[in-house]
Length: 106
Length: 238
Image 1 (cartoon, chains in turn red, green):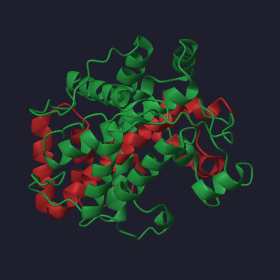
Image 2: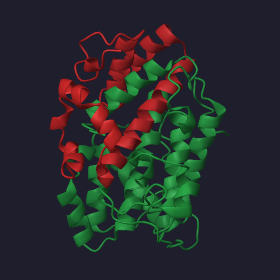
Image 3: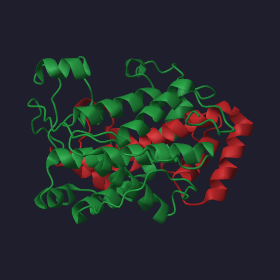
């Protein structure tokens, strides 16, 4: 997997039908209902109808986790932080406002 | 009628059961909020999403509430529901400075996070948002775990073992990352968070098995694409 595509979805993420999953993930939390319906239809054609509830459950779950993490101000656990230095730099996520919840303890 | 009986797309039975249980939990007395207060919080969070255009208003939204929530609670709900990246330590301190307790704040953040989760799922599979349950009578338990201490989150948390003692062992096993422990100040919400995590992401004991596929038709790398993209769009550093 090319994780850079998570923040730059025009890149090839290197996962089968990853392009469709990136579009679905953006549409499910976006405001364009027609775009979501189109993304869902495309995913059904590519992965089958049973994949939709799984993709929706994952999107819902991380919608939850992002709110729990930011809302309660948790830091990234040290082992994860240490192992992701290069990746965080590559993705530019050190600039996220929620990064303060980790960096204020360093 | 089961929760997703009207869905044209298949939904795994254990996933549907976890969602059904969470909807019922919304209307039950919690640790700090009554059933009516919890439904008022959940309904306000849903409405914030509808107002922001990220959810479509259902014809039958179920229970409503005419309870007037304090401004500080309304502000937390609106921000966490729609713009969680704007929550910071100043925001939290202002909420607590307005008279809300850290445990009440935790329960509210949990409720808002859970209903947003369930509404995103409904939208994803193409069904209307599910009706909210009627609130049940009863008093909140108001039990604060004495093991919770100020670690590095905004709110106190129960530390991992050995610092968290026997309670931590029972709740976490040998170790849980912060994202799992975040709601431990309110153990009932912690339990709900974990139950959703297991059904929706994967059983936590499988997390290091990278070829374990929890969802039909979706490989683990494909699941991680969705997870990573949603978190990136939410500017979530965690």
